[in-house]
Image (tube, rainbow, N blue to C red; front, side, top):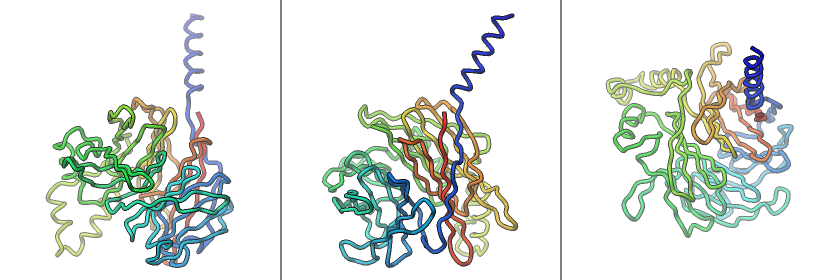
Length: 362
């Protein structure tokens, strides 16, 4: 009897020792008017933020401090070599900042010289890019459809900072966690009518890739050149799937109610909104539209954490964060295990931005 009690106590203590919690430690409202329209931000060493603002014609890049105040801006909109035509997605891995320019179909790479001074050191033509970018060593990982010289199709590739070398990484048939081109086509048939966005992160030489419509993660070892598929949809993840009749009705140009019906379909389903990778885990953030404030519904983020073998370690809601958009910009500081989500609330006047800072505890 005593031995059973002792075993039970050991099991309880083991579960406590390996328990996870993602704890909200700070909320940072961004001052009104500081950011007009943004889909991406990064965190600097001093804890301040850089936002890309594709709507501001005078200042496309903005530094926001930890109190949400605008403290520095640069980057005019224009055709010149030091100007932007729609700064969109960012990544920062000390000391490099990568900025995707949507209008010029390019990615610019800067080196942080001192403080908030950045020197351009590279540029990449990337008209194929279709989502967030990620720095890996002296390269940029770029999601997008490309065809190799051998005629093979890929959805993730990598270019060095000076655009001299291209490496193809994720084959088309493995997108959405598919294991064949037939399985990939079936998923596209079910959900391909809604614009899709990919998310990527990297830890050392391992890349993780996921798309918003399916919670299946491609895990790619760049050194060993092997690919695994992990991911397990939680009970509250409602994967998008629409029959052919409904899809044809939605795509009918004469159907004046198609936009409303499409919005209703999207609202009833779940979407991946990002992922982050660390030494011993990968975390997928997904959203459900379920937070009601008066007559409006908002997207609420959840997180699911896996080990590298694909075993589910932890699941939880990330409320009180919520957002008008199903893609919630995020950034993860690996050395501090701090996760930042940026809520975007739209109203008639402008967008309101609020940063939620979480600590990943184990």
